[in-house]
Structures are given as C-alpha cells and as structure tokens.
Length: 151
Image (tube, rainbow, N blue to C red; front, top):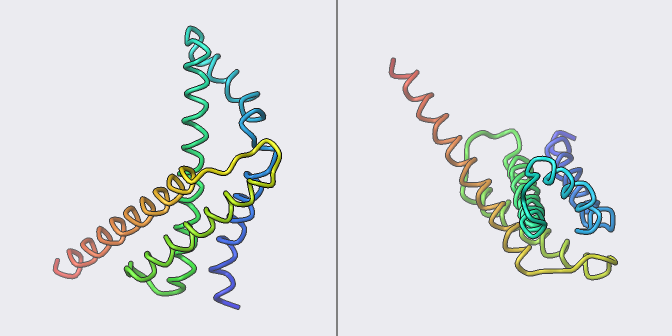
C-alpha cells in the first residue's frame, strides 16, 4: 500500500494530461480565453503577435505538464528513499517521454487536435529540465547537510 501512495499522484497527473489532450483544449478553444486575456494585457499588440503568444503559452503548457509528470514519476521510483539517483532520473525521463509519445498518438484520433513529434520533443525537454532541477535541489540539500554536520 505504501508504494501506491507514491504512484497515485503520477497517475492522477497523467489523467489530467489526457484530459488536456481532448477537444476541450484545442487551440481554437483555448484561444477563446487566452487571446482576449492577452489583448487586455497588451491592447496595442497586433493579432499576429497575440496568436504567436498564444502558441508560446500552449507550448509552455507542454513543457510544464511533463516537468511535473517527471517529478512525480521520479518520486514514485524513489519511494521512501531520499536523494537523487541517475537510474531513477533516467527512468523518470523515459517514462515521461513514452507517455508524451502515447499522448500525441492519442491526439491523432481527437477532432481538432494534431499529433506532432515536436510536441514530444518539448515534453521530453520538460522532463529533462525537471531532473536537472531535482538534481540541483538534492545537491544543494546534501551540501547543506554536510555543512551542518561539520559545524
């Protein structure tokens, strides 16, 4: 049962990503909310600029979705242990990239969505970035613990 509590957040987040891949979150649907918000924030910006910003926000969503997923998968693989291990990190990135691939495949069958290998690359970059951050946080924690031990 204790391993289940580590995997459950990753499963819930993967389900959220699946929902983000439905027709609810097509570019046309998100533009109905994001473009007016951007127009409010940047009233003199031309429509082409607002559409470009909308595109960047959507791609940033890809990056952040898989950033979070990779951290949650890493947490599941690590379990109750602490620290950072390259095997846990590598498997977390592989699992996130594999899920990104299946997510893009799923989008082939969703009206209004398109599958893109570039999105898988962005997703995988988000996963790799997550592991770099986790590594740096764990390294900083280890250095702080060593300083406290020597004081």
